[in-house]
Image (cartoon, rainbow, N blue to C red; front, side):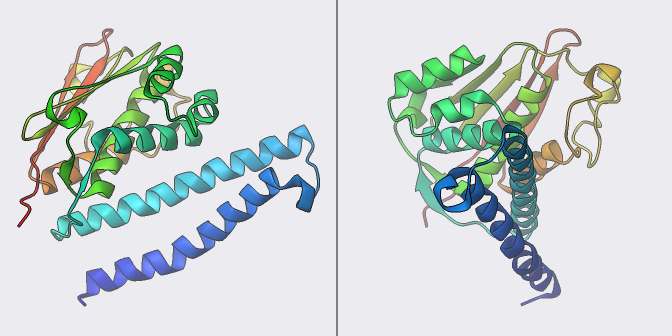
Length: 249
């Protein structure tokens, strides 16, 4: 084991455990009132805020680990359905954001009902071509992280809607679009830089560390793909991702 791998393992060991304890404890307090006692509205809202921020910390830890492993060329090869991974990514993003859509789609199995709930909240999904039914072969966790970061970014900056399109016959093609204010021309080159966020008073209350797009780009390129940005100020932003499948052998 090299020094870098040792640091990664130490990071996982020292942070994942305590964060899991906090998350589980809060979940029990929120969902097991018969055992732990009832909560006032104020107490519940406070615990929900703590839970969401704990989940953010867990996601950040997972992203750091996946990025580090991708830079070392470490991939967990498996077949998986993109639609299922997209669903999990959306649920994670909506839960962390505290969106009412999260509670509505959790546990929903019917595709049309799932789609209808999302569309009512301004999220439109289109999965076509090969990966509508056939599995993709790559590292599931890394693909899920890329989707999660792009979805989180789009939902933060949209005005009314987000469109997600999945397609491709060999390479996986992902398009995530929002109808936000767009990115000024002079800031587009820096948008993937670490800790860069739009310095715009219109987005002053948008949460984030400026790491999501950096992580997405790092992962996509480590996976042999590419990510491009198309934006017109005042007309929204779209991120296009292409990821080639890994070889089965």
